[in-house]
Image (tube, rainbow, N blue to C red; front, side, top):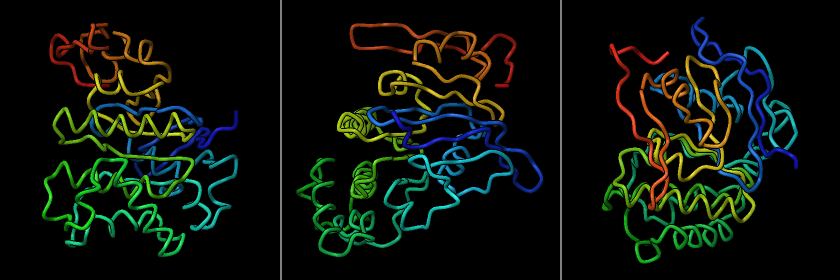
Length: 258
């Protein structure tokens, strides 16, 4: 199966400092690939590098098998949708207009239709005409997720879509992304909630110090030695009737994530 997105030995330097080093991973249709790691470990840089939004100092990024640098912005928009970490809504536009921005390259009529479909998918049909700034934070997050879904791209990339949300809203967002993956999309998402990552992702890429130190199914990627190395945590992934749970505490002597 051809990867929707690939990084091959990628490196990124910012102001002379290496923030991504020798990073390789691939995201495939039908899966949710989670990217986890401590703050400053390079998660956002990894996403941006893979989409051609951060200049590589080494290696290569590919979308649908094609070098990102060979693709125009319109071509990239057709291959990948991106939800950045910043969720600020500056203008009080109706929710459907914000969602339609994800498909703006398709033309007004199709963009509107895709926006309304996406709002239905995230459970906001009745709020389609409400101004986004009149909504709760959780509702705004779902509007922006609808903007991502409206792209109908074969690759969906979301940077911390569950950050700051209550458990129900976070689970709802992961369920929506899982449905898109089940329908054939490749989904890449960064997360801080390790339990949410374990339950919602097929594979996890664990980052530390700008490197991918593990890339495997949750049971392997969240092994005790990886939790220690990436997060300075003593813990393990535990199965419960409600699903997998990461039980952990700070490592002895307060060591910092390496």
